[in-house]
Length: 396
Image (cartoon, rainbow, N blue to C red):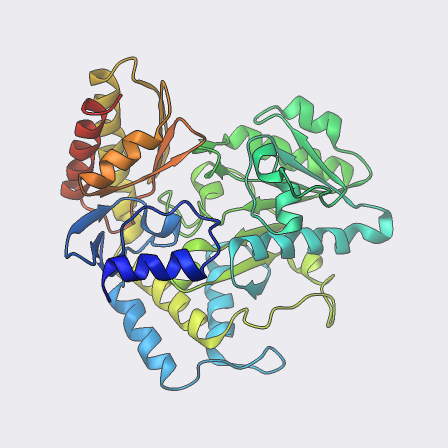
């Protein structure tokens, strides 16, 4: 189909809740996408974090093809191989516990919130605490855990029982926590908020506060987990303690919709038959793709590549900050998660990058976010930063 016709279909039949640019993509491979006119783009934000392995990784494609020929879907009142295997592989890399599967990060956070309340409800523990500037999803529970008012507008009243405390302030967290607290929700690295990592000291302090009042700790690693920081999970990179519940999504299915929570066994026991569920969660296709994604990370030594490419990205961004002093006002990075704050709106720079063949995105109005795939090379990072440099030079 012609690109213009595809855009016309969207305009006529698809709800307009996204700000879409005019590009129509038809193919992806590795760190590149091609549009309907055959133009190639370097994608340093594949799938808003979904594409941690890049586009159409061969191991994932092969696993999807093989699974599709055997079993596409069966509901969760039965057993099948790939879900059990994927649960085992996740637990082996995280902490002892059990897994619930769903389809997205928002669903994973809904499950985490429900499990925390279910675990504590007999003791009257129904309150959840999250941090300012956080983002946990757009369904009502996840939205209520999200502290950013711009996402709440027009959707009030939200789910009651959520409190927000300043980012990185353990004293404020200690004052907010108490006998009604079911859980403290933390993103080890705030992603949508603009790549703000918590410190290991903060994570350890939050764990102590939670333990002191009998509350749980939930980590939202939907964006930061599964290798992007150079370890399997960002809390490991930061030197933090294990949580009681951890939410995962974006790269989990290798590109297919997949989400999960891992919960320590004493907490997971609160979910008994009938308390929570998901029709599509943990389906054979998504789990086969997830197993292939884990295999790719290990066999292709992608954690090593993330650790090797992290300083390449950081050094390049610091050089650009020196060159564009005053224009670039701040940099933040944790592994292959990076953000550049500008002295004004970032949308124009992001649009110029796209015109020049580079895909990044704008968040928080002034921030340009980079989430390159774990397969990214030195040459691709340098190529992307050269385009970003040009975009900065040619926009105001």
